[in-house]
Length: 612
Ligand code: AGP
Image 1: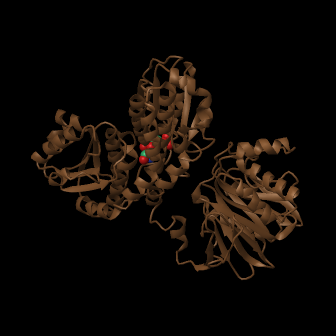
Image 2 (image 1 turned 90 degrees about the vertical axis):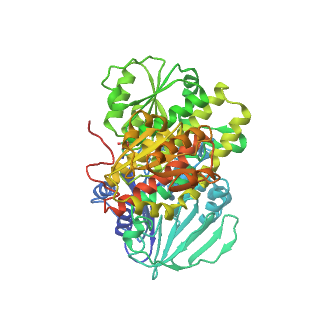
């Protein structure tokens, strides 16, 4: 997710843009830039943080009372100076900033290349500004009309602001699926990704709706039209939030915000890749390696922490659906145990940050043995993404909370798409089952939305167990990795000792731990092993263990066995981890909160372990 700021008014734009971008830096970025208009259209942009941009423009002309600014969270093209926003049209008269993904940018680019356009960057955004220019030149229409026509042909998500040398008092903005807020000041206007950069200037804001275009003009004020060219009356609201709350989107912590972002982050990770209605999965990043994947004798997954738990779900998915042997390795163990690695091996490296030292070292080892390395990363241009042969980015947006939540479910999304794609290519899945799973995968964001509605019940349960010294998490099949992940979430933010175990393994030792002091979280959403899970619950109950059961909405039996029952929407088993993990994330969060722990920056932890 990128940060967007625009200004037009009586003041100098540059300091307002920079301050706004600094307000948005919680959104994460890998490059930043501004475009300033004062008879000349000047663009200053560079890889790195906003502070690097400030250094970059020292001594340069930053005059102008209209401008746009952008912090980039790369989706297309490495983080570097060229790919940074703003991007210029071919004639140098238009500048654009963009947050989102233009899914059909390749088709548009091909058409524009045939019409003589040339491009400097790898971004989808540069294609869009050239498209707007092409329309303005060919149709001889005003900027806002050219933007409207262009967006009628765009597929994907966008929040854009465009300025033109020909209109030095006008900003044109539009959005679809990515947020945009307009601040209405005294003789000045602000546009931003959210209200954070605006609130210190004015509390009067207009939230642009999907498929609306706003024209902000110092002479004519604010006008809004739809993509279908229907006029809309701007609805001005008064901001009530504090700045601090805004940076967390109104949530108390980034972790809670990111837990609640999961329906959107999963949707973003599927965007342009899952076409359930057509029965098509497109993973462009690994397209050239699909045959290698299909013919692989073995797939090795290397990762750490939560990403390792995602890898374990990946093993169940790929073996269950695509019938290829998978081994999941802790990267730190793999790199030192002198493993057997064949040239025919495919190694999948999973990492949110893309900078984890042990995972990077494991990749280098496997590469040195001739294996093919694919990556699943959340940070474009990260070290791991640049070391792998190919990969698929999770589009979860920056994950600020140290405890990984939305990155985990985004990783599962990619692994699900990968497993289904390989299974379909290998013919190891019946067409009807394949289509059924694609349709179900498309429903996962909505099912997570429903699971999030259980937060109040989970808060109550958190109150009951906030002073507990130990927790046990049990799961079978696809839910075994979820038991591990739930235990890790609790450990790392509440400092309560917790263990995740395969439910059947409990009899081989951990059952000795069970007494009336021991809460046992049991994941019971599996259809295939439900009776076995019920037996495990009865074994715990017989020893007076306190049972917290995560089960499906239609489960009537479990209420007589468990002290607390959290009921989530049923889904196909391969996708159950994406839904069953949500109550465990919330349980860990609320228990940690009650214990006064620093949820976003737990003691002793770092967001990315770049050291061994
Ligand atoms: C998860 O909540 C932890 N923050 C940690 O285990 C993390 O998953 C691990 O360090 C791996 O990080 P990566 O995904 O960035 O490689």
